[in-house]
Length: 73
Image (cartoon, rainbow, N blue to C red; front, side, top):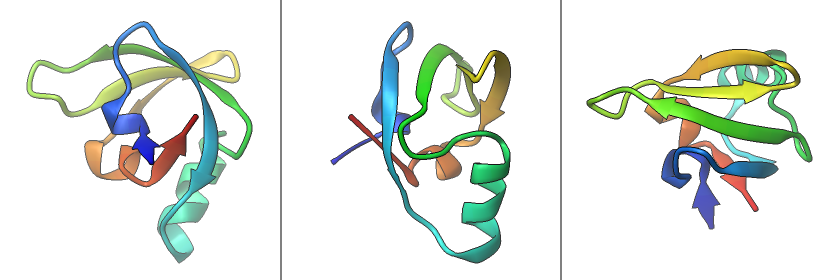
């Protein structure tokens, strides 16, 4: 299982599954990250948090803790 946190800069990955419960999972889905969507890793902050991605035509910053809940292909 590889997560979004482990993806490298410049990669385009597809979301395979979302982990988490309740409000946390709902917040990730509300940001447009759902199963099957393609996510492009734009850059990572110097200390690794947050991760900037492009999803559904817009830029989004995701915390490492949230990125660990997103399984990718």
